[in-house]
Length: 312
Image (cartoon, rainbow, N blue to C red; front, side, top):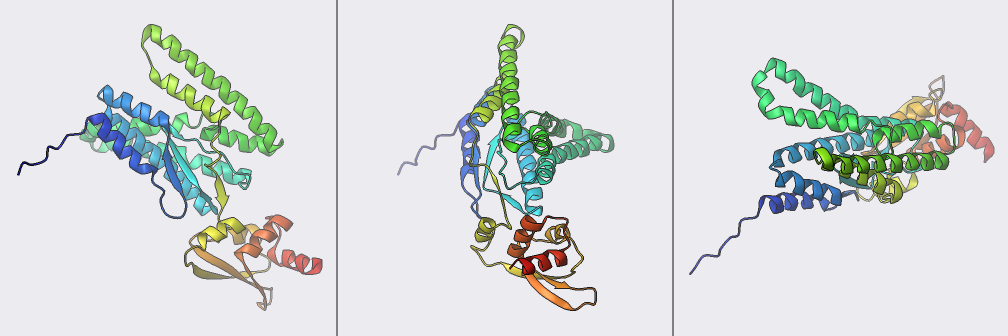
């Protein structure tokens, strides 16, 4: 019997097939998708013999997004969709994010990229031979980290600026202003791409320009953070068994101090004690988020509970 002929995949097809596997939805309702621009960049890099550079860039982007997701989870948020772009992810902030938390989450990605870049650069002094196979990955991390700090939405720098502006003006007004800036910046990048054709064609200008314009004019509403400890977040977390965790805390502790103790992987409750260590009451994380919304994060938990009892 004749054996079947096996057709070997081309470099471009093999690379694209490996990237497409990331589009499957992982557990916990978080889906991962790849931007069409990323596929275009993959074809370009492979066509010009830079498949290794593309893999390094994609790895740096994944590290970048993992940092966002990790810090977000630590702060009590989760992302329902991660859309991988050549320079990061086009994320559109949910109204549930506080400005302070949005800044911390946005800073996490560039910080991790810069840290990895510095670590590998330091290795060159200790192990000079490592430069030959680490310099591309190092540069990719530095480029992606620094690029994402540009204060243009939806880059991380733009998200930080948006959060800062939201503290002074209404969120909607700040968001509109940032989108206009993004369109202008994208148009400049596209113009630079056209000009580069005269000297040395640089498709990166075009990719960045399209990314900026499309993200500003056609925002992907699927990519949003949701609060793990809010009602919808709790429902998603409790779709599978959760271990319970109980804290003992003074009634003089602030709401913020209690929220910092919340664990996304456990269902948390708090036993509140007065200054004489007499038991006052027990509240769960759902009641805690309601108290935070009604009485503020800086309010002592005992005072908030007393006000709540008087109200009802």
